[in-house]
Length: 340
Image (tube, rainbow, N blue to C red):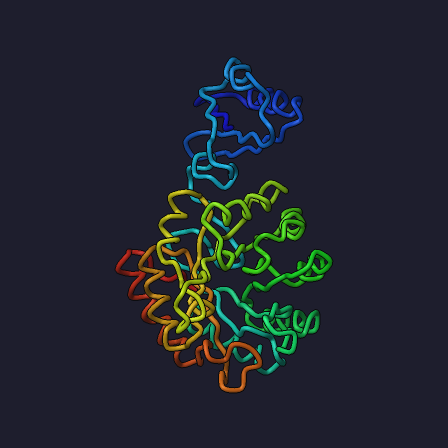
């Protein structure tokens, strides 16, 4: 349920509405929009409570939301959510590029990659310190030592960091280093982990699960938001289909669909979805053309010797060429790439 406050309603009237909601054991989530103030009511709504709230001073309308996700819905928050991380503005008119290696391997690899992607125009540095791998024998990351190398690259370049957290017991450790915490596709429905990152004051990226519907994906975001964290980014990284040539199938339609259903920013991951470096650029351009707020791109100084996902990683030269083409597509949409 959402409560729409009347134009010109007072702070005391808003406080009274919040107090009435919380007196029923419900949670009140206030959204101070440009044109109106909306209060989201989270919890099991008692019978006749809608009628009760409609009678309160300062209330313009009370609307029942049929969707199971409330806080993530466009009805609750009509304006697009904008998330600022360093110089990056995620959810604004310009696509934000998050780039770096799949896995942190050593200092030289990390620092050289950070400098190269920044020079090409990326505004967020990605890199995995904790890696969920299909095989237990694959390289599973350097853990906190990898986080320290990410932090070193940040100090060298000024780029904010996005990296994955896999377990609730690692949340505080990862949060010490990361500017954005990533929830991987395999953990999209790890509800304890979603609760834990929701209690942080840092942005969280929620990747779409391998076979998740839009509703399931938005409900995962709802978990984070219901725990108090409104800075959520969605990432379309490809879903399972019958075609085996690519690793997954990137659902380009997810970009405009999510923008219709939700106010949260959405980015695309053409690296994990395609699994082949030569497909990354065309799928990235398609995502930007569809209106994606950003891209998550894997870049490595020497993909042939990468410990993780080398076949889908771009060289520095190829990443630079991608950035030029992204700029051209974004310009057609009248959305130039954000400057450093």
